[in-house]
Length: 260
Image (cartoon, rainbow, N blue to C red; front, side, top):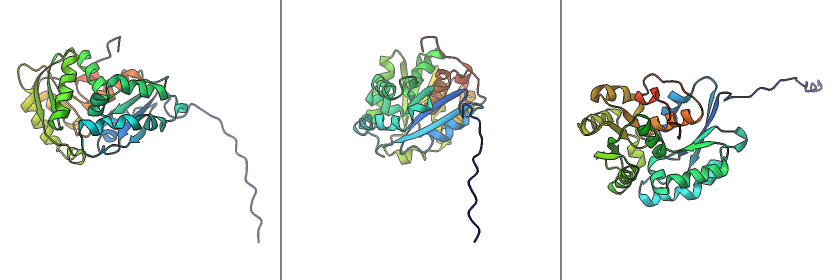
């Protein structure tokens, strides 16, 4: 019987690994079926690395179930190792950020990743609206009334005039992810076509909006924003990426205002 060969010691050199341009972290809802697919389409660029962690959440979307995620957010953030040196990190739930509070979300993320810049879809939406100089908007959500009203009131308190609101009135996140992109496109045309609205925000990371943004903007002649789009844009800008992305909407041709 032949003796086992010795294990040869191999030489190697080290480099900076993936993410030499930017390292971006995403905290994704356990029930989300859409966000990773849509964000990878616009953020996977040469030198950019994406890292994902999932956070537990209940399938039923209510103000109470959304607030429960605050307890699990520190552990979910810690699943993205601090040693990665993330440039930007996003908690990817629009309604969750609304109910937990943007400042609280930011504080939790920074407690785990003090060197990273942070965002969430609601904060990103406000930054995007400001960058596009939009004040009068239409809001489309999939949520039940209490969650939709909370988001409307939050945007209004931030100085945005929400002149039209439409909802698919669903509280089951699994069903929300199965709402067709064509239905979303028709909703944008119906709700966002009003003369007193200068742009549209389609809320919820589970909704499949990225693929119809260019068509929707062409149809109504206004910027169309979505939770995944604004989150991708804000994370990119916070991480120092300045490139425009074809097909990702008017937003990706804008830069952050200096204070953001």
